[in-house]
Image (tube, rainbow, N blue to C red; front, side):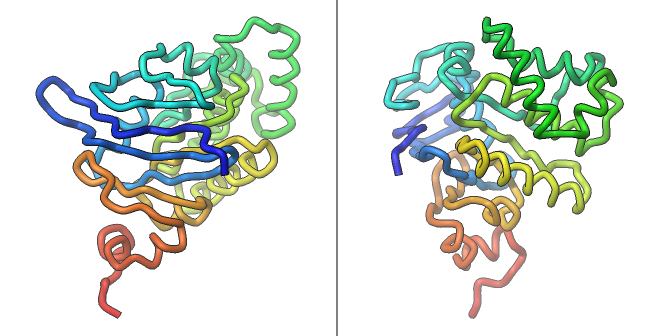
Length: 242
């Protein structure tokens, strides 16, 4: 599989604190990859570094064969990277449609934007029903759908999703994961899924990486990670004994 995104030995500091230590990960074209780990493991720092919100002290970040290590966030979005941030973070006082238009802020093709708005209404019929409703009045699941749709408005090749199931009921969690898998399958968009809930994340991913204190501790296919005693004990609440 052709690599779309590559982090090669990336180090990130917050002042004197060494937040990421030689992190190397890869996401292939059209692939779902899970980035797992507990609190303060470095998951969100990795996500922000990919988006250009954190600066890499050393190492190289490559997207679609080009070095983007020192590019701005706007240029990374234009290159094809989008994000669905933690806790959704829709614009609560803006309508559903206004949120969608905001997702296309780096684009200038007005006809294409209008076409994509219609496409989002087709992908997410509930959003079409609530197009003039303020986003802050939507349910948690509907806000997550809006966050997905807003990310798609930039026409990305990779979406980075930070804890997309956080705060949702078990039923809505299943719906969100189904939507991620559907969009990946239908649109061929690669997904980097940052999650604490390993079993959920790995249920739709092909591969995964586990971060611990800013370093990659374990990597493997989804099946391998689910069967790894270390993962079972640390993240699935199961004993590693067989």
